[in-house]
Length: 307
Image (tube, rainbow, N blue to C red; front, side, top):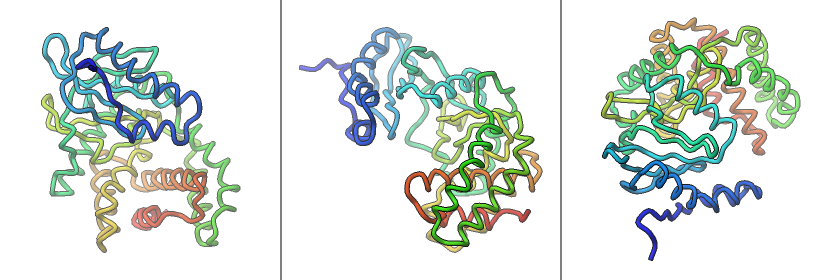
């Protein structure tokens, strides 16, 4: 009979590590139940609810020895996992889930427990939800960036170096012109990449209801750069619902106006760095074999103020 602490990993998580992963990924996912058991024992934790997972991480709801609720999050150590730890330590719960403990060797995190069943997407008024997100974003940007994080300048240079080959992979000449146009804007901005600590993936589903505050951000991928580079996930959030309506461009423009006003951003510069995100997304799509710019990227680009 298995121990009450034993872990049966979700099939989708196992598949994401074994389907296209190498030996290192397969070894990690095979050992994960043992690692969870070790951490539960070391930190005197008891399981307290159903497991949660994404493609890359496992979340185990737990209770600490003093009875407080927490969440044990495990993900294969990577550059972005290290960055998340650096960011969470620096933010120290200011607008974001609080890091309670971590294991340097495995990169496992013990986090404040939030309500995973209620995201900011549950707020029916989009303006209210976007203002809430903007408030959290402003707080995250206000914390001085620590050492050890990648800078947007390096990201921009890497993107620009990939553009010629990527453009050649696009079938439609209009897409090639669009991609090169975005790259031209990024070239103009790259010399002044900014110095704020960005979340990099702040959208409605990465904001959860909490007890300490009404809403807190989760799952950061910290980067040092211009706040305008942080806007795209918020502009694009809930896209599946938006694309079924004719209001997508209007909603994107409204969100852009709300965010830039709340954050006090220069609109033209913010639009330029948003185009940089569209460039980045498209380069990733091309790496994955796509030969056209995704319609959502074009819609966002056309809704932005013109350069």
